[in-house]
Every structure is written in structure tokens, then in C-alpha cells.
Amino acid sequence: MNGLHIRPATMEDTGAISALFRRRINVWQRFDAEGRVDELPYEQLTIYERWLHGGAWMSLETAAIFLSHLLRVGGVTLVAEVDGAVAGYAEAYPGDEPPPYGKHLHIAHLITQAETIKDALLQHLLGMAKPRLTVALSTYDTEAAAFYQRYGMQPIANLRQYTLSAHAGQSFYQATEHLPADYAQIAGWHMLLGRLESARAHWELLWPRLWEAFPQITAQKTHRLHFSAAGQEAFVCYRQQLYAPRSVDVYCWSPRPPSKQLLVAISDWAHRENYRSLTLVIPETMTKWLDQELEENPQRQEIYAVEV
Image (cartoon, rainbow, N blue to C red):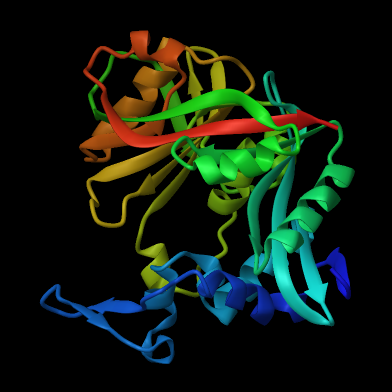
């Protein structure tokens, strides 16, 4: 494509990147006091109401905070310009995890206005990835799978999400609040629970406290804890579900493979905090350690990878 140029994103690109994300929203809505849904122009929604349609990129204010964070911590943010106008955006996270992932660059977002721009951004990312490029896709998204397969990417992991009841358990453990957010703390660690993208992508979204200026966002509780259970160290994040406040999504990073004692501790802590259920991604080998019945959720993803 004539006039196509790919470069690192800067803060000046915030509005254009946000516009690319917002273009995917067909209808802007608000819930009224009676729970009814009203369709409204984007301009009439609050920052929080926009957030509910897709997170940080939905408003200029939150997009600027998040892009600034990514630039500070070394996230890969690229824009594709066509004749000087931003027409595509790629967001990726360098990471280091145990096999089968290894050292990699993980694509979190690839948003464009045209297929040729998408091709150009992916080729640029392939040139940056050493030694592996990864991406997470819905198992049901055959169109996206076909696109990445054209570049030699193939599935290396299947991810399943489950819900289980929070139970009191017999396990000796300590859990303390842990606020430092440097990714170096988990480099090379397993992501035992919650991995639907990459260990670093989830970490950068969940652990830094970016949204303290927005009380409606922080009203959805996030617990960031350091666990020690039967000699196993782990960082565990519990994220309260938006429309089910007695339920939490659980994410866990640890230097060692999972143990039954750690899983019991994670469930026990949630039970003590009066949560009723936990939603988590569990490797199949871990399900045998859980005494209660698991409910499998419809969400299924696969991690695709290619060596470069």
C-alpha cells in the first residue's frame, strides 16, 4: 500500500488509537436506574459508561493513562500510518515463561482498517519477535485462525475456563497484600491460573494500580496478594466480577508448577472473604486436585505460535 508507514506509538497517537477501538462498537448504551438499557450518543456517556464497552481504550482520558503505562514498562505499541493518518494499531508484550511458551512476543491487539495494514503490522511484529511470536484466539474464530496460519502460526496450548464454589480448606498458608508491580518479579514464572493471553499481558492489566482517579472503576475490587502455601510462593490476583459481586476471576503466577496445597489455599482465602465462586483457567492436570465439581464455561481459547 502506497504511503504505509509503521512506527512506535507515542502519546500524540492516543486519540487515533482510541478511535480505532471505538469504531468496533456498533451501539453505545447506558443502564438507567430501573435497569433498562438506553441507546445514547457516545458524547453523552460518562468515562465509566464508556469503559464498560471495552475498557481503557474507550475514552481519551483512560487511553492516555494506559498508553503511558505501556510505554513506561516496555510494552510494544505500534501504529500504521497511511498518508500520515493512523489506520492501524498493534499491542504486544515481551514475555518469558516455562514451556511450551518460552521467551516470546505476545500479540494482545491487532486492529486495522484494512487487511493489507494488518498484514504489514504482523510482518513487522514477526521481525521484532525473538525467538517466538504468540497470539491467543477464540477456538471458534476460524477466520482469525486462518489469517495467522498463513504466517505459519500453529496451536501450542488449549485453554479452558471453569467455575467452582469457594470452599474452606485444610491448608497452612499466608496471604499478604503485595503492591509492587514490576514485571521482573514474575519473569520466567508459570501462570498457573487465569492465562487466556500471556502471563505478562495479564500482569500489566491487573497488577499496576492505574485507575485510582476513577472511583467507579476501582469499586470493582481487585485483591493483589503474595501467597506462601506449603513452601510454594505465588502472586494471586482476585478480580471481583462486575455483575456478580460475590464471584471473582482468579489469576496466579508462581515459579513452580501447581500444587494441591496452593489451590486449596486460593479457594479458602476467597471463602474467608465471603466470595461464593471462583472463575479460573486451570490446566487439565490440575482438575484432579479439586475436590468440588467444576463447571466448564463456554469460553475456549488457543495459543498460536511460530518460531522466528
